[in-house]
Image 1 (spheres, rainbow, N blue to C red):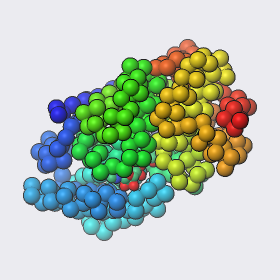
Image 2: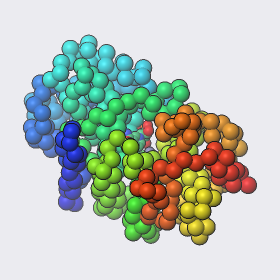
Image 3: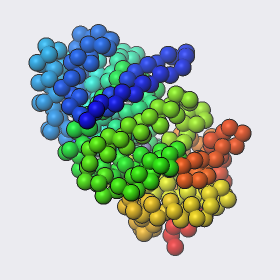
Length: 375
Ligand SMILES: NC(=O)c1ccc[n+]([C@@H]2O[C@H](COP(=O)([O-])OP(=O)(O)OC[C@H]3O[C@@H](n4cnc5c(N)ncnc54)[C@H](O)[C@@H]3O)[C@@H](O)[C@H]2O)c1
Ligand SMILES: [Zn+2]
């Protein structure tokens, strides 16, 4: 399979530029890639315990063979550990190892590792370089792109963090071979989200090839990954700091994050986004923005992808609608107590009003949309 090379080039004042390499057998080529980046004295590979068990020895051997000084530091896998405490522990481990500013962090893992290790890089001695090697499908298509790093708090998700871009992103498709099926579907939700809002053709391609996707047809997955990344790079280039358009990649997330938080992170992020997509599509339909036919089509598609109205109904039995709405108000996207939602207008595009992508929605409308799924 050919390697796809995509460029991230953000406008001034930051003038940030880095490459996203997408292909197979890329990990072996890390030493030569590192040679093209900021020269450093040593590398710290940050990964979770699960990934360390499978891939830790292999990656450290690649560094050793190339005579590069590298150490691995780990933290327990799972969203529950994407915390300030983990950030502190990792930072302290690096301080104990006497890592200076001439250290580069290598984030190896899913979105939890990328977000946490990226945040360590952003804050360690006021910021050191890092590269991101996303290994879950979700991290490949979404979280490794765009420079948002951070941790969760007891008040809500991703409430502490920074914009800190990696020097390179290496998407080695081979990592998908050992990724559990549920994690694949979890990650596919982020691709489905970006295709639903930006690219109808890709969405239909995924729908028509769903069985092959689930069987991990690697060339098909590479196409989905490359297109998802390309779309996200486009959004981030136009609006890095989420002043406007970047809100679109958070479509489905206002409700999704609330469910994720209330479930105490027992549901995967992507699945929560999937349920968020159902509810936020209903909001658009109730607002008269999305046609009933397209809303039904979204529900039907999502059903095919394993996100059913029945499962959402069961979730809503567990958490009160009141609690979900309350949680959305604490979400970082809430301004003056009102939450801005992105509204799907058609399959493949969202509504803008005077160029603005976010629309303030009354909480009663959100309640109404949630109530629809309880019946
Ligand atoms: N920064 C952003 O812009 C952004 C965007 C989207 C999502 N996110 C964040 O991403 C996180 C979710 O990421 P995730 O779904 O990757 O979760 P995760 O990092 O917890 O990974 C899921 C599980 O899969 C395992 N795993 C990862 N790669 C594997 C592989 N190749 N083989 C076998 N097992 C593997 C991990 O060890 C973990 O147990 C959330 O915290 C979410 O907020 C961030
Ligand atoms: Zn997400």
